[in-house]
Image (cartoon, rainbow, N blue to C red; front, side, top):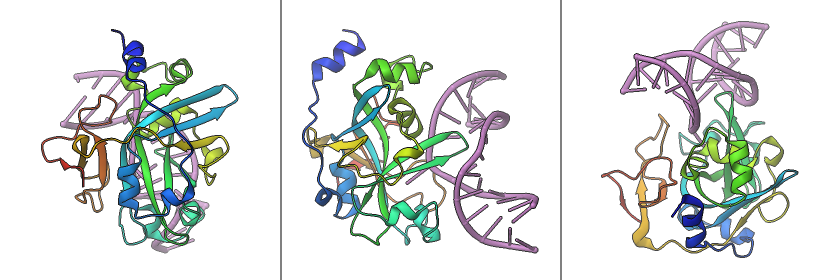
Length: 216
DNA sequence: TCGAAGATTGTCT
DNA sequence: GACAATCTTCGAG
């Protein structure tokens, strides 16, 4: 069976849009519950979507790794917005990363979406990421998924309940399939176990490794 | 105004 | 595994 056929055979489900109340909870809980949800982006070129298989929690001004640790600036302002809105930022001069803002207004926490399993719009994703040779390489990183879905500055601060960028309920990932590990690519608070991923999924940016614990 | 850092990725060895 | 690419953001002076 080829990769496209394998994807189709699993038939993930994209349900209703996740309500604001979903995001208005503890950031760690939102990060875990976003596994299995579907992120969809509509552009002039078409719509592409993927099932979330990896997330990281950033816990606000008291989390040294969170952008909000420096306080409210022009860049971090969307983090202080309503739960369920998007925080999209530019990094390393060439990549975008997308977060879902969580908790109550005024508490600048968010969940970074690190990897997706492609769901719809595979041809569109491939045209945007011609270097990706396998379907598993299309969205297995925060910069890659933004490229594949066409996410950029125009989505920063937008609601994830309506408009071009939306998050939909999907098939809940069983606790036994969820691994928790330290966050990736950071230097401050790097040991905090705030990364959630679907154990054994080929589309995560990095496998869980031996130090990972079950669910949480 | 300037310099350094950065939640990444792709290429090369 | 090492390293370059590339540019926004923000603190320091």
